[in-house]
Image (cartoon, rainbow, N blue to C red; front, side, top):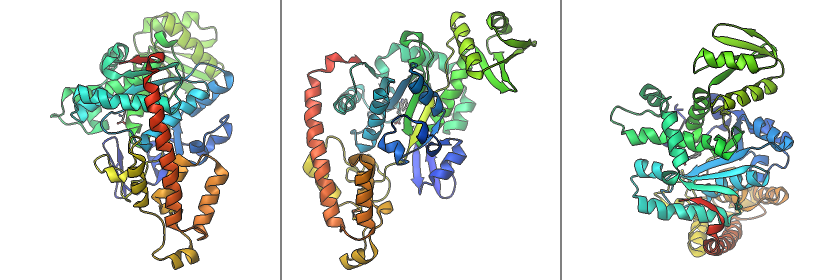
Length: 428
Ligand code: TRP
Ligand code: SF4
């Protein structure tokens, strides 16, 4: 999406982000309406840092009914893993703790073509992401893979790419006639990353949630559409039931009609089925699987806020001082925090009188997004700031100490992970 004040696309995020408008224009759902239904919402969800979603009710229902579901996200190994990536990693791990099967993709094919990275470099940096997410607590029964090493992902991507043409890619991603084929194909690889947890090898169709930044929404929308395009039956809600069509010929519709035990009206090109929507959908997917179809469920997604660069503007992997990498030395991280742009006033006197502005402060964002999970504690930091009871120097020092401790611990854990990587199902 592009207009005067903000640009949000997979290749560019610019301007002041108005999240309410982003939800509207992209057609997402606000997370605030869902929070009360989530069994044990994490701090990111509680604080609206995860601000939007698509179809998250599928995940909540599966959690509550103890049905199989999965969480999947991917990381492009083009720069060092940093706290922005940590946020996605924390989301994957939290969903895994809530009962989801976890899938973690290292997008080396994307990095190869979009960022011109060599396979060796992709491997080297990719492993830092793998070790980081394990050090953060990803459990052993997860699927962690490099795109280039995952035959299932590549095969499914090929089938998905048969459902997409150039005009569509141009409309979604702005591709040009000069755009190379690999750059187009990795969009199908990403769709396949997201859909492959539903292959029969992994137990078949299931709700899958993809935690991402809002810039990835075009991928999500295309993938949701591909889920239905590649499946045999498509659904449309009608009064008291569903209208079902076959995308692969009417003979499938005839077979479905014979097997579905509901009230129905059969037409030439579709069939109207009456009854409980979930029941109809579930039964239809079961029949589709028996007929050899994939019966994919459109994936759900959650969207987190963009993180601000420590130096003010946007965070950029080409500006190392604008973010803290999970591999920065604790001393470097400290320096970056101490130099960060805050929401403080020009003088100490003014700050005591007027208070700081945490909503404008990169350090407060660090506390809020990454460092402080306890709500009481974050509220206290915010109050102290707003009421001028703490000055930025001391506040930054506290944050720097927390980050230093975290990094020391994290880097130690990453080393320790090396010794038990073989316990994980790694596709490398
Ligand atoms: N394109 C994503 C990025 O630039 C990385 C990615 C690859 C991804 N495959 C994915 C994200 C699947 C979510 C799901 O960061
Ligand atoms: Fe930011 Fe802390 Fe300064 Fe407030 S006191 S503006 S939170 S650094």
